[in-house]
Length: 223
Image (tube, rainbow, N blue to C red; front, side):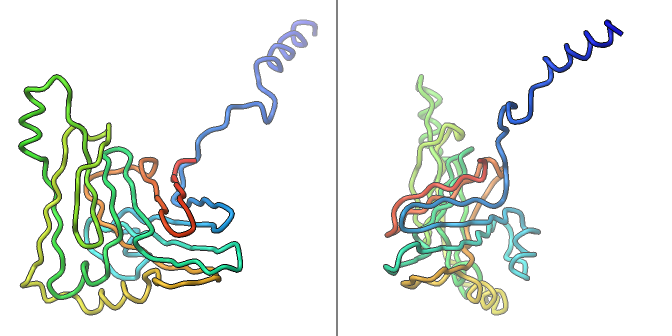
């Protein structure tokens, strides 16, 4: 009996009491942040299947959808715009501003591709310090290099208009109907934002940056 009691006491010492265990990071497609003026709630749909299910139509490859809810916390109206939001991939430095429905599905839709900067890559081979860079995808297709330790070489963003593209009227209608409205509001406002996201990314790598009239907020999907 004494031996059993001794073993039981040893187990109680080794097993930490509830509440004393180290908190684990939670990775979720939902994230939120707020300040005195606004709360932002976001849900991300990264894969083509997830995006198709949320939109009700296939938006095509390399499209990430963000469902955003903007909640003003004062009586003062807040101007909400799609360009207030940036989708950030920590692992390779991609920063993407939302694309308009017409850029994705309209006639003469925008074609986006990104390739390593060959000049900088050549320079890196003869340099003792490696180049750092990512890409910025803008609503109008503009871009520039952004530093990121996850991406060893700069990436050049190439954009062009496909004049032969007839567009997709049904997809354009669906994207337009669900997009986050650009408007001034003192009431909660919800809608979708559409981002180009190339390459492979894990949910823990993703974040949303809000840079709008109500301040600056960082929303990470790893909490």
